[in-house]
Image (cartoon, rainbow, N blue to C red):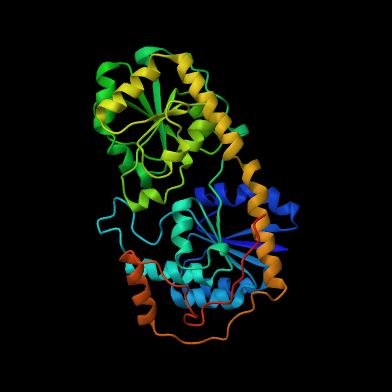
Length: 384
């Protein structure tokens, strides 16, 4: 069976970690993964969406299509799965406008309702999706890493010569800049402390020595292993609660203890005192970093525990079979006629707006009914 994945780009981090990483497991279910970056031009996009009829399964990743394009895709695709790993129904933490966006919320609602199944990157996102559709159609599949790609850190450095590390895309650098007070407080007591930033851009941080390192998928594992402590900070908002903790998982896979603030998925990934420390203000950050910098055996102990946690709970080997089973079972139901398309019916956009406004005001939706011919009927997918 052909699984066509409509994605942003072949090298996009979400595709690499949430879909491509599971290609081997999909193959065990007879599914051949075919990535298809979404085109930008209208005519090319329409042809691409209509071509979905030649696939057995279509996986739409993250993208919130305009409603008319979603309708084309839904009518063409024999089976549609939506994968989401961010709070895409709103704007990001550092957007100049407020997080709430009715346009994005409407598209998100229509997309999850149109899909035969939704895979969500964490429980917060899964709960949000389940407010729109039957919970049985929603599957929490965490973002995973392959521990074998990360050599374990050696933890030889002591005291002020310790290396902190932050890894991420340029778009997430604002969260690192917000850490400036915490990092400056830590460096005040450890003059030789340095921060390595593995990214395609260099931040302007004062109060600590910053060593930029170019990001590459081929070298990121070794770059992390050459450091001592991984750091992560997120604003306490809904966008952050939709994040799936990839950088924390990468730190742990590389055998690094993690210092993070207790927001979103970090509260569940980092076991305080066992795989790292959860710290709030500058004083707690300075204390946690100083303790780890001056104690290599403690770093090694916490780092080893973090790597074992990833291997047991957040590895590709652990979740690949589950992801593939969800896809295969959803495809089977679609091919057997259990999810036959509803007849196209037109429903005013105002109805969708009203329902989206209810959600934005914190109300839980009743089960939606037949919006705008975008959808097909749905049935629960048995848990693998």
